[in-house]
Amino acid sequence: MPNPSQTRIAIARRHGLYLADSHEVISQAVAAGDGDAESYDLLGDKLCNTDDCNTRHHEFCRAWHSAISAVSLHTVLLGDKDKEAKSKSPLVSYNAGHVADLVEPGGGPGGVDRVFEAKVISPCTLANKQGAGVCAPAPPKCGNIFGFGNTEDSYRIMIYGSAQRGRPEDGAHHPDSGQGYVPERRGHYHDALTRGKKVIALIAEVFGGLSPHPTRLLRQLSRVAAKHTTRDSTKYTKCARSYRKFHGQRISHAIVMTDALNIHDGILKLKKRALLRGAA
Image (tube, helix red, strand yellow):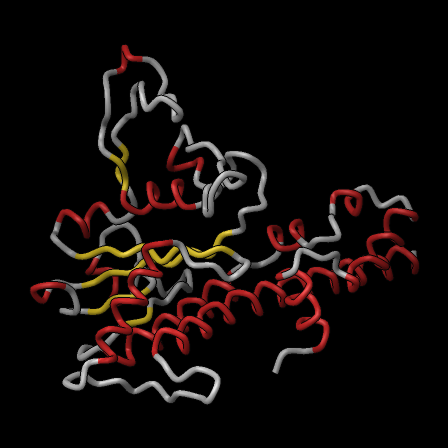
């Protein structure tokens, strides 16, 4: 069960409200002359981006593992992201150079392997920060115009790569006109794509929304679950009696609540730092 502070943070984040839990500690830190505290905002975006995001990612992967396993006729493998176990993981054989988050052997069209890469991203970051290392020059941030405009392009290029467009003498690429040169980029899953595997990017944002491709996958799986000739091991509840509603809620809930937990832990660290400063 989530603690009360975690629930308050999750509700406030979903409605774009200031976080009451962080207001007092940040105000006290600023009054005491803590320069770092001035950079923290009352919406929780700074705490969301700086604290450990592994828990959020792992819960997102587990929710998708539960959704896919419920209707799959194959064993769905959950990737091990522990640094020491990466090189020994059986999932290494599905893609060289990058360990997949989920693999469904034989689950794709024609019996090909389906490989999943999960990303839970905050759209509230400094411009051109996310994905810039792989996608340089990174796509522009357009989240103020359409959904996932700050996140999806960079991470899809990071995962799938991109083909060359234009010639070097055409100059830099201009997103507005579509003119200019785009160099070829190899994504993390270049090996899996070359070997004919089906790679699916499960991209979501910290506020609980799924990008179009995982949303489409969820609809596809719900159609499979609705057929009488297939299995569905989902244990439905009164508040969600369909596959799409049930697993959509679980996936979104996993993102929102673990994001709130990360912010809650960040607030505790600020309080601890304030106590240490007072003791000194």
